[in-house]
Length: 157
Image (cartoon, rainbow, N blue to C red; front, side, top):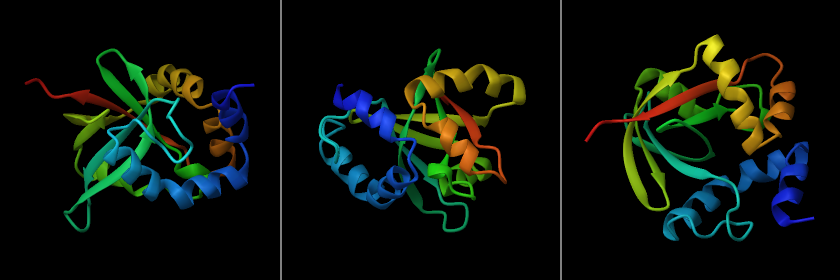
């Protein structure tokens, strides 16, 4: 079994989510420093980006390392927050201010985020689950909320 397959299998566990949440800040810094070439788990095998939003309370830039799926010329994110009972801060920031930055492999692109409608969510969810099947387990654990799905569209140059 490859490391990629093993990670995707282990990702369903609550312990994995707790470990991921605890190390995500360090992993974000490592990936930013290496332009996405290294992760705490070694070479990243899953599509990941750094999302920079504007804090809805502080007005300061806030970064989150997230997995993504591709949809046409844009990207799709899900606010799983590792299956916790509350939405991740970055998703609230996007609702308050949909302008953000996406950094993939050291290349930064300005984007506008939109919260997916029910129909769009149904269309996008299979692509997200293909990237990270554990989102299904996270949704089951986050019983009091629906995981937010966002589509990020690059701004025209």
